[in-house]
Image (cartoon, rainbow, N blue to C red):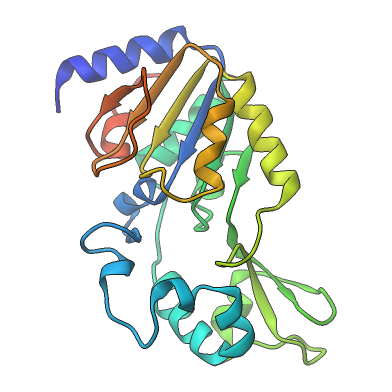
Length: 241
């Protein structure tokens, strides 16, 4: 890694009073969770149906058993722990210099690391609810049952994640926009910025420094400072002072 990149990022963090972090799948790959769009990601693998369909509202409604087979095999199959990126952000928040984490990930690792202001644009595997009575269930309830998980009332339990064909939560989006708009520094990390409407939220940033940390190809952002490295490996070298 270029030492000058780390030094410049350190300078940016040192002068920042309010950082907002916008992260995608690349933030969690160092925790062992595969992404979707890389050459080894889920989209490059072969399944009974395309991954976009397997994680869609239509699949959940029409082929619920197939949905849960894929969901358990490819989304819940990882005993992941927070990596250096998650831990850095939690410490930055404790220092009073992080306005929020905006994430496209559904793994809950920011919560595990101790972050409090997390805007989960696509929901979380940690939350589940009954489609009939609305009863809440944690992740263990999904793992404990085989096949299609059911509530005690007989209703089907659905993960509180935004499936293809579903809209984002208005309250979560509003909170994310406020955090982005109020920040003087924004770090965009581990995302190709191709998933909309989530990727469109960065247009609300009006601060001074925009940093992009990403290994793969992505849409260019004019005026951004780019670091083409792993997210955790990069942020793990930054000191909070």
